[in-house]
Length: 49
Image 1 (tube, rainbow, N blue to C red):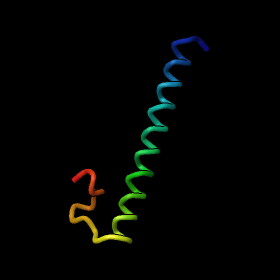
Image 2 (cartoon, rainbow, N blue to C red):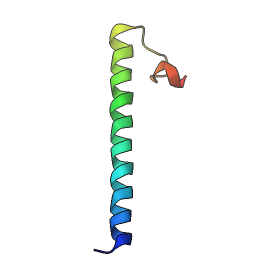
Image 3 (cartoon, one colour):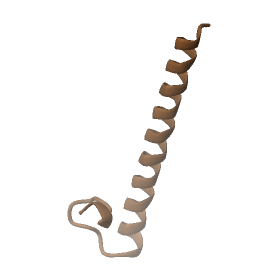
């Protein structure tokens, strides 16, 4: 595989990892907010309101 292919794969992997981490963080904070505090009306974490 050439360098361009490796660069593309590395970029795609990085984007996938970031997206997964953000998804998990949003889900975790949403669950945390809804179970331990009053639910946020918009359903989003307080930091995004």
